[in-house]
Length: 251
Length: 301
Image (cartoon, rainbow over all chains, first blue to last red; front, side):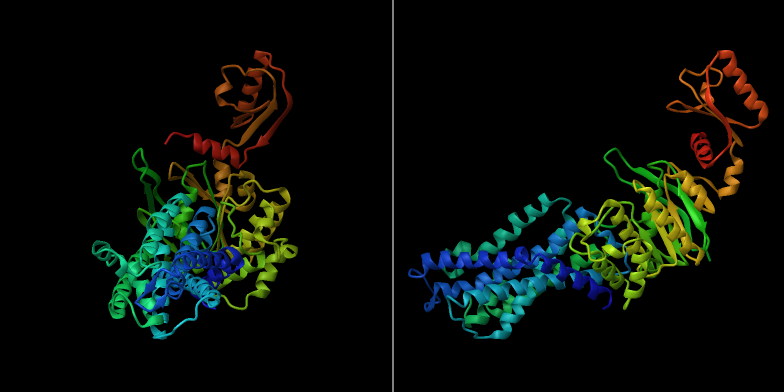
């Protein structure tokens, strides 16, 4: 293995060793959402005029799990290593900022997809899936996981304390995912909130992902792809810059 | 070409009370194969200098070369040549000892490293801990793993930042035996330590830092010659007379008085006799590195 592959392997090994916490627990939470919301709303809501609420909810929950776990992976790994001091083992190596970026984002994508696949497998017990356009499913899963994994790198570098990390997660990542249309189609919202939702980049990740399953969505999947792709490039440019200059880790 | 070349290295940290200058124009060269000691009190800038060398911090001005490779512009080449043992007792709780060493090898792109990892484990007395999780190891064992991690890629230059702070006698013996062997095989060693007897025994050349500046730089034997050559040492329970009290170094009951020659020793003894001071365990010994260190650090800049 070359240097960056070793760092990627180490990061994957890290979350695998605590799989109950990093994979099984988020799968369980997503299934609880499905059981509770599905049970309450199943008979009252039809989406796009034809879908049962549970069928509609599954892709949203899968994507939400992908996004939250991709973010949690890189951000918690970095802040733990900073606080424990063992980041020094990586800092002392010849690994370039690109190697760091590939390894931390790559392992976050891996964890996001594993948890997403886990949630999806369990939900098969409640809803039979459609696969209208599978390539879109793959594209949005990968891109969404990469975007959140990259945001996690930025948050992990920026935060000095677990407290700041929790604030980033609870006041930024959580509300933006929850308000992105995981639990509802934004067409059911009043016009003002529809417009607000269109400003939330997380909306396009969930909406585009859902398009892959049902062939129907609130926004065009091409528009969603363009917005999510641009957002990823922008945060990647920032993350690579922070890694290159050693922001908060090489002073 | 020197193994390590510090060229006018300065470092200023911003603090709430204004900028703090940790290093002020440090220049020194460490030659290939040297066992070099970096000494100084806490806050003198030793760790800052090592951090800049290792790429953990950036110099505000000046530059550092490792066998000709600039630690900033050509960091990958510089870091391949360095094996750094950090001062803090850090570890990754997710892995066992062998995993940690394999991963560290991988970061440097070293493949098929098992033979060398086995040799490191053996030489550092870690062979029976290879599959133990890092969390289960005692402080001394963690320190040994830090040394092994720094050496996985067989670096020509080994940097040890206070490796023996708070470790037991057995580990010190193991460690110094091993490092001395590597030095004989041609590795350059840069050591910072608070234990001056260690530096005196091991280091061929020594630099002393004070307030971010180099205040002494010489071979260990030259440094020892610059010291007042003898020390009169005894134990007493009472206060010293005013004539000699300012010259004395007092540690509990032990009093040490520097003296150039036999005449000065006689004068010290006469002063004690006149004051009627009872003394025990009187001896005259040659000055050691600690005497030099205190003399250099005590001198006004």
